[in-house]
Amino acid sequence: MHDLTDAFVELIRRAATQLPDDMKKAIREAKEKEDPGSAAAGALDTILKNVEMAREKSTPICQDTGTPIFQIYYPLGVSTRKLSDQIRKACAIATEKAYLRPNAVDSLTGKNSGDNTGIDYPTMHFHEWDEEGIKVQLILKGGGCENVSTQYKLPNTELGAGRDLEGVRRVVLDAVNKAQGLGCAPGVLGIAIGGDRGSSYIKSKEQLFRPLDDTNDDPDMGAMEDRILEEGNELGIGPMGFGGKTTLLGVKMGKLHRLPASYFVSVAYMCWANRRATMLVNGEEISYA
Image (cartoon, rainbow, N blue to C red; front, side, top):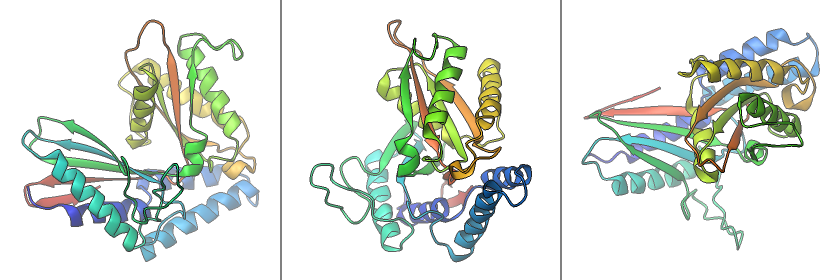
């Protein structure tokens, strides 16, 4: 395997400076639904202008360039240690080039490493697969939306939420209502049902890699995704909490097996700057999506 450091730098640049087409389309459509001249329409218009400027000038879409979260799919025989080293080096280079803001801070001393590397930073998840090439997905998870991400344990008597999809619906809408504008709405929700506390959070963030227009393999969860999206937008929170018809741009759900004693629902809230990019490596050929 040849050195992919420069390719990883380009992947980071694309994620940080280019909002995916499906997200831009959703924001444009949301703007058309808002009342002309409203604060909601103005906020969405500003977002769209910012997105285009970031792409044209190759500068970060948001001042908070977030936590880099990598999903790496690799064939048998590839060294994950070497890939990890190259990803860390790429993060340092991308920070030097100002694609990323220095974000890695020691949790006890508060000292910033200065190059977006540190203890288990950036976040990397490795998956061996049967394909010959390598696929790397990257999402940049901002701190504001991370702060309103949350986890529930069912049953929840306060919300009348039992251990079923109706219970999931109730706690997820509660999470959206509590977030208000603090998560930089309109947002995208990644939802995980089941697992333990840790695996549930990981699964919820994995949902954020899904395109907005894809279809859930489970028809019941797919129907609930649509319902939560509709009802979330009926809350009237609106872009940045200004009020309006667009609080959510997408809802994606996944599930895990669980212990009989536990039923967790994790909600990964992603702001409108749903920055994700994909790199495919097949031999010497590298492509991006």
